[in-house]
Length: 316
Image (cartoon, rainbow, N blue to C red; front, side, top):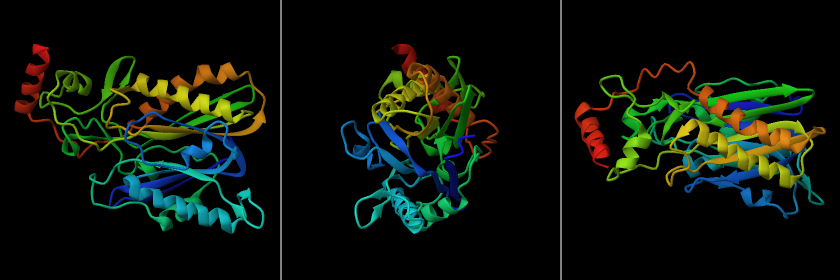
């Protein structure tokens, strides 16, 4: 599936961070939509409608906040060694875009560097749709309304679609402030000592809670569809509807949410078909990021603190 794309991961388990690279060695039409208010991104302006370059060679998703953007330089080196990139005249310049999430407080202060990005490329292969605490999801957590100590482990999530020759995969690294929901109900999030979900959205609605900035969900849609750059940007935009379906709350001022698109162009499609598929497919990918996670390190929210904020919510 999606034979023109390769996915590779580098995971620093000891320090709790990593990088995921999605390679399009023959090039793919790129798009992006950044909805989060606190993003750490690379070359996103390049993907705007009207800019000269339409083809990208790699999307890099990394931990380490803005420090982790360094991993993209290792991806640049790997692509240069393989003579892959935009023909700028005498030299080829690899087109590498990316985004980072905040995992600096998950274990130790660490971030995926240039070497990590290069190693992720070395592991890249087709049909590499594994999920869990790998790559950019190594230090990813959710439900951080009470901070990192009561956060719940998430990671890389994936959802795929194939019909009549059209192939799509959504890959996300889920590191959200809020809980993960399905069908309007919380399925993963911080819990009280009574083993009840504390409900981040409800507590935020109560106000007067000091929030943290340890968040951001980032990802990429890869497809064999034949898309224009403008259409790729539309798909990246509607993917955020999937965030709203599966994260509660989503797109806060403390999330740096960003979604990329890479389209390799083999399959002609009715574009509205892709538009209708992407939100639910993105939601499924986000949900898959917490499947099979043990969360053995999760700490129950202190019942006194929980009762205090529940009381504040009732007053509203």
